[in-house]
Amino acid sequence: MISLHSCKLLARELCFGAYRVCSAGINLVCPPTIVLAYHRVAPHKEDPLQLTVTPQNFTAQLEVIAETFDDVLRFDAAQLHRTRPAVCLTFDDGYADNYSIALPILERFKMTATFFVSTGHVEHGRPYWWEALSVCGKLEDHGRILAMPPLEQHKAVYALLEECAFASEALEECQPLTVAALQEFSRHPLVCLGAHTHTHPRLSNLGAEDQYQQIKKSLDKLESWTAVRPTVAAYPFGARSLFGRFCDYNADSMQACRRLGLKRAAANFPGQVRPWTSRYAIPRHLVRDWDGAAFKAKLRTFLTRGYF
Image (cartoon, rainbow, N blue to C red; front, top):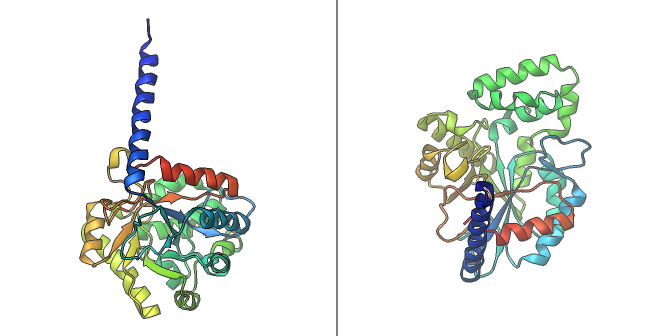
């Protein structure tokens, strides 16, 4: 007699097999674009947040991209899909090492990238609260602080930093860009800037008007500093829950981007970009500190296994 567990496993394998066949067929007639999400490129010893890619591995990853794709697209391109598979590189938050370390490596490969900037951190030099938690060994508080409104987040983080005398020096390694550096950064031909809200809140914690103002203020600040108004944005955190239910952003976030006339907005869940993909919920694959071989294997999965 076949057990219920065996039946479930068989059904699961049949479903995934059908999904893979369907994905392969769609790829043949409609090649996907893959959007990759980075945060930092920097030397590091410990990285519990897994947001940092070393310069060596970033270089190896770009070598794989150069071998794999004909097109590396800007996120603000008129279209994000091509007649052949394509890739788009994005960075979140606005870390200083995006300019000092990542950009020179991108220059070597002549690859463009889009940088989504949390303007409040740039304007005031505020540490990113998740980095403060990491430095102070308090990552178990991530969920609690994520759920707080922006003002309460700032208070909680500054209280934490007062308790951790060593934190300020450790946080020097993961500072945001300065306004002056951002201005110089923005003039580079390989750089595209996008909004990432002003204070990096979890947008779904806010009402519709507050979400709109968060994105608008980020756009306004970037325009005032660079004389160019961005046409794209990314939602902070940007995850969605199982079966596409909203998590870190919601319908109000998407409507705010429409009201502001943005071309598109990036989320943070895996998937491929197709002509029918929602312009205000572009999927992205988060990149970890993989060497060239591991990245190549991951890239193959991103390209062939769908999430279309």
